[in-house]
Image (cartoon, rainbow, N blue to C red):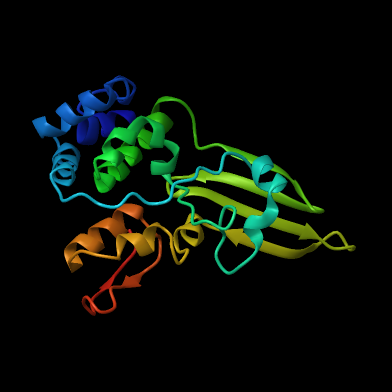
Length: 215
């Protein structure tokens, strides 16, 4: 996988590419030696976008200590929309691009950074703890933290089980998916949503009727 990524995406070993820094990644994009680099350069040249709400859910313990996010139809962090994907994780590193409105470019670069990290270090991590008598597990995925909440009944069998994928955080009425669809033409909105990678099919109501399938 490292060799495939080096050939198709990074143009070098992922561990070396990760050391470029923001200026180096911008130069890598401008050179356009791969489809990945050319895609990033195209996004850097696009019109500025509004920066979405960003919040990285650090650990299962952190979530268990603040269980307010379980209330409501869509999870939220202290009542606010939260984005939980790679962009939230790498926000400090990509802040300059976000300040300049290069949200889609930063989102794509964050995905490349996450891929390079996993290829160079270890598999996606997992974490678990207890929450009000239930077991809470957090599994790190490409789209963000996947949460599993399980409760055992008196007979030792699972009596309640709840799964919260990253998409539920992103589907908040004020979340990154709603913000991505707030303005722009159909092609721009579709591109932003696919970069978020919601893992659900969606229809751009009022823009066009064609259904876009999940990545």
